[in-house]
Length: 262
Length: 339
Ligand SMILES: Nc1ncnc2c1ncn2[C@@H]1O[C@H](COP(=O)(O)OP(=O)(O)O)[C@@H](O)[C@H]1O
Ligand SMILES: [Mg+2]
Image 1 (tube, each protein chain N blue to C red):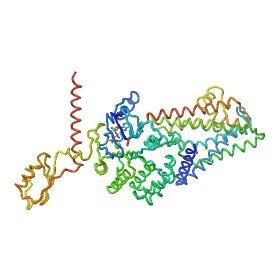
Image 2 (cartoon, rainbow over the protein chains, first blue to last red):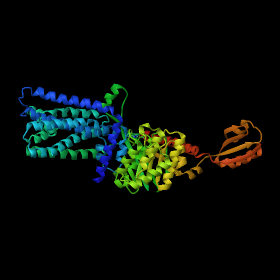
Image 3 (tube, protein in one colour):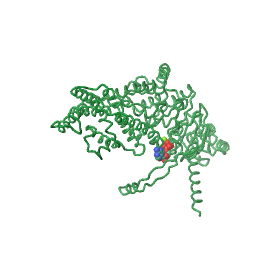
Image 4 (tube, each protein chain N blue to C red):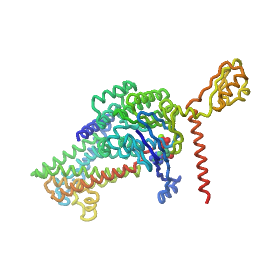
């Protein structure tokens, strides 16, 4: 464990210093973060024009949810996305060889090598909106706040596992970056509470097939103190199952690694 | 140290015809073809040996090294390296070996090589003292001073290769798999890299397996040569024993006055005739006989009989093997053609 923590620190350090080589990116990224933030808030105010509520959520509650959405989107951009993008590249160019020849768990190594510091403002914006809306809501439940931490971690795990499993198909279909875009498309649905979707098709899709509900709705429910025990257990269960699945799938995929020729 | 028995690797590749219709056809009914990259090779390598794999492009050298280092599962046969089965990639195994590929790089592109070294230090759990000592040693032999702090993308190809080698050897592996480590480098740099590998082999008593299609790499560095051709070993032997297989000898002559070329051609293949000195190729068995005839019949000032350079011996054996393989194939095809 100690070894892995030390390696995480070194990976993060080297990844950050490599990005400092391209500081100009930072400004571009800042601007695009702000645009996304304003867009999300405008979207909300249109939907809640007459403060009627949406799927049983008030405007402030929905703002907590958008905060959660932006926070997780930011964390994904900082922690998950830069790594999964590299995995496809490593398979294509054959530099995965070097990862496989290191005495370290290969999934851990390919999943933790890079952080995108430039996306960090997104995390702050999301977190800020979440806290702001919660304070305005008043009477926060401390159990809810405590529960929201495992729910957010669980949500991040679910995102990571889905992205990771999708990108692992790179071992068979060499160009797969687009498949991640598909997931992002679904992920955008997480800006809205699951109950805002009509019961039936979409709601089932976003709960069981692409578990968007557990990514944003459930952590937000925890924060506003409206979470059920079933949701907590289901979230933890889905995250664990997906995590085990991602490991098994990775092991299986490595068997068909043929190491691009040189 | 290394034990390989009837090792095989067959790749299944999909064949695509040209053009849109071809792609469509390939999509509907994919046609696959099996490439026998490594087709039944066996050899044993003792600890501390320096072995060179020679062979044309596509002969199966890289594939063999990838199986030895554990990157690829063999299709058939068995491999043992330092008592391990490579493709299980056990931690203890990975700490004992390294693979350097001239055409792939592990160094982080945007950072100085030094930073990549630190990553490897953590992953291989190298103690600070040992790390410093090794790095100091490498810096000395490879002359890394001043290049470790520059971003890798700003290094020349040769400088980068030196850093790649250092990064790959920081954990002081006992078995080195080097796949074309000198590819693309100028002659000077090739020599430096060779010297470093030889020095590492001496200091750490490491086993070295090197592939190259530059004959000079192998002859300068290796005491034993394995020649592969279309996935099979056509030759395996010490440099010394290869000398014995040379079919020709070279007779070098100094004349006391000029003689016409035609006169010399009666004795053997004239390789060189330049004023008063000449060089002719004579079948091995007749070398001494021809030499004495030359002495008697021509105005000779000096004569020496030499073995041809190892490069041309290997070249000879390789082209001979190619012809043999082709003949075998023709025999097989004829057998298959019979009902
Ligand atoms: N990943 C791969 N997939 C399919 N075929 C491959 C792959 N790698 C190598 N080959 C084929 O296997 C043969 C041997 O290749 P290789 O081992 O790279 O030869 P060498 O290193 O001697 O040049 C070649 O015909 C090559 O095209
Ligand atoms: Mg090769």
